[in-house]
Image (cartoon, helix red, strand yellow):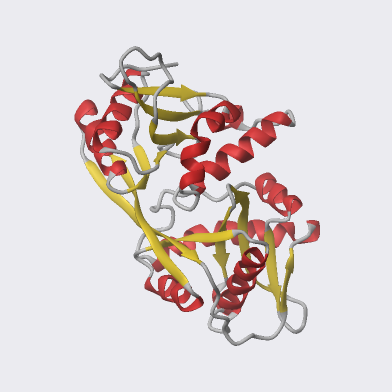
Length: 314
């Protein structure tokens, strides 16, 4: 389905594979900044190819989509012309936020108008600044609301690893027998992240994956546990499979009773090094309101790439 916006045109894709065929060159040109869109589109495309689609269970009041914004020269048709903006709306939790990659201000405004014309109320937005704020402000104008900052995040990349002193124990992939502890720690991660940033649990807007999703992550081999010298799990590090040559680490969680022993630093360092050794670039997000995690990752060799924000339209 195509929109209208002068020279700028928006094409909405319900098929992630079709979206990737159009947006692939843009995502490949800056695969670190585009990591969230790329990993989700590739994962859903893979699941659909295998006959799996959990979107209907979400109960969202709109159809899931990925979008490309095109600069359309005269005489070309919808979906043609250079791609100048990329976005998606695939989140299955409250406010169902859209996610925007960097794009010109005009493209962000056109995207807001096109989503509004589809009959969707866009109450949450996430992604790269300043595009996400421009889109949110145009959405607020259309809805008669106002924009509020929920969370400021920062995307980091590591090109090398400064390894910390190793604590007792070792890192290994989680297995089916670890499902209960992993599911509990995925849930605790979101609540603790809000507390550490000075927010009420749940205020950050992110929702933990359900038990089935955690089980699928374990099955895909994207969750590892640090086990201490007695073999007890004391820390969890997860990641997303590489997309366009970039892997994204997260979540990183240590229960309160095991903190301060270096488990998180050692686990992230080991996971990062493994990807780098395989020729894969590595990135992760931090909450800017949490100075502890920001300082930790910089000590390991991570460097800032871009700032992002989660915004709400009230």
